[in-house]
Length: 264
Image (cartoon, rainbow, N blue to C red; front, top):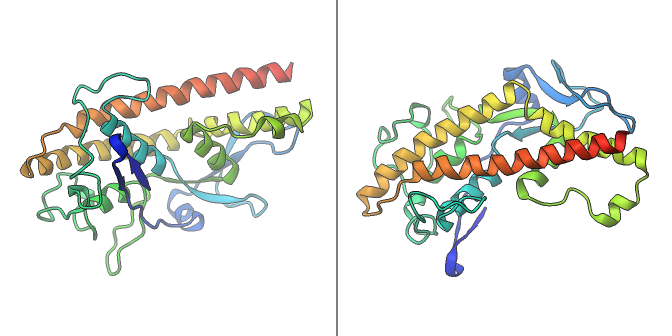
């Protein structure tokens, strides 16, 4: 994933391979889809104990990879998505997140990170961060990480990706091609994608991943200081992520009200 910073500076974050839906279901024993499908769908999400073959299932990153990349970009910008200046100021991009930056270096020792789960993982610092978003098992080791992964209807994941990206889920031209009843069905699916995020297991995945990343940012800050880079990555993380969630909450409320209006 490309990182864009001020004055044309760029960098990259490399993501990990992760287990598929069937593999994850064996551990979580739950998959999420709409309670009642179809154009006349009613709002609601149901958790299933097996994969209905009629549903397009995906392994979904609860804390999206793009959310992580965007958070780094907000750190570099020195502000939150709502425009509030970060207490820590702006993180440097050059020397940190660019191709030769310390984010692409190895931890000095296996025990340097205080976060126990990442100790023994193969790869560099970048790999430990993105591994917390979901990763497969290293060759010969038993350390796959699926805390951030849930199995859900592909439509939930698709609409959620649009929301995270801040993009329209359908064009105006495409929207006008549907009649009023079809629009209710579409909006119901979009609202259900937000409802899916409220299912107990999903916020739990998000919170655990957020907290693990917060701790690792603290470790990264300690490492950066040994390289002469003094920046509070952990406090910046604590500011940028809630601001993005607040924008998402407002989007959910707007969509819910629109669906109610069409249903009248």
